[in-house]
Image 1: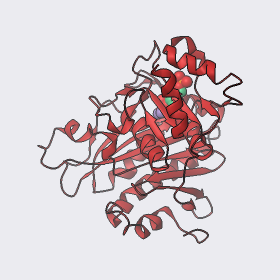
Image 2: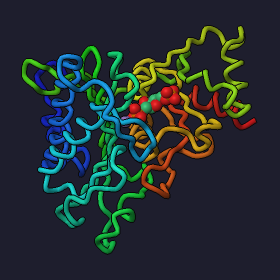
Image 3: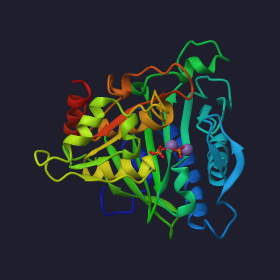
Image 4: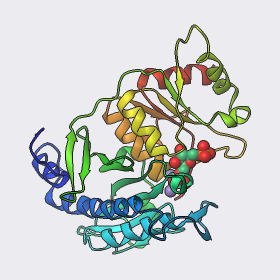
Length: 330
Ligand code: AHG
Ligand code: MN
Ligand code: MN
């Protein structure tokens, strides 16, 4: 399907014989996400010309100061998904509680979980930011009204997951369980066009990505790893840290290496959120041949106990993730 103009909606429909979830209904849901991210992309491109820079003066459930673009992205996604009759529940990093659009039913069977704007600290300095999404299916036979029973599922149950990175171009990567596929937004036609199918993460890579400012707060094993990468034995490792998870992950997916956000004294369970940051990216990483763990457990096997649960995250090339674990679990 390379070369010709294949939009993401076409791609889902053309692949639907490969996996049951990619039905027209799923394509309709995904088009709600692509519409929202096209609107967000247009706003990001005009940041500084329109009134979307800076803070709202509010603090969210995460205890973080909410940027104007966080709110705009959140409401844009909520509005675009609200029109999709097959979406029952929405979960957002920016919302204290789930939004029950419709009682879960055979029709309203999807749950969409998202980080509407990842990398908020980078918005005002024109550095790459992104949106991360995860799609679950409501569980059968659960009494309606108990939304958390539907939501708190392990990442291995995701129907699909993806991210959009707003950078020099706007790129969307998604998986529905049959490989990772990448699309670039073509502003001249307002559609995401197929760029790469079945993206494979390099098996190894000498780039590590971590905020070393917290070194003294990391577990000893992580500190030992950070010492090792600088030795002659390790060879020429490089450090890249953008501070937007989506951007650091996108680079890792394409060039290999490992991203680490270990526990710190300030964030003893890690900073990143399981449901709408770690799980969706772990699904993509594994579909591309990589790995994702919290240091003890495969991210996709973790059963969340609360909506905004945080987790340590080590994600990237399998050989690099295993190497980090070999130091951490000494
Ligand atoms: P968000 O903007 O959605 O809150 O996410 C920010 C996250 C993630 O994007 C990034 O990897 C991490 O915060 C950076 O944290 P530090 O500034 O502590 O390094
Ligand atoms: Mn985030
Ligand atoms: Mn965010």
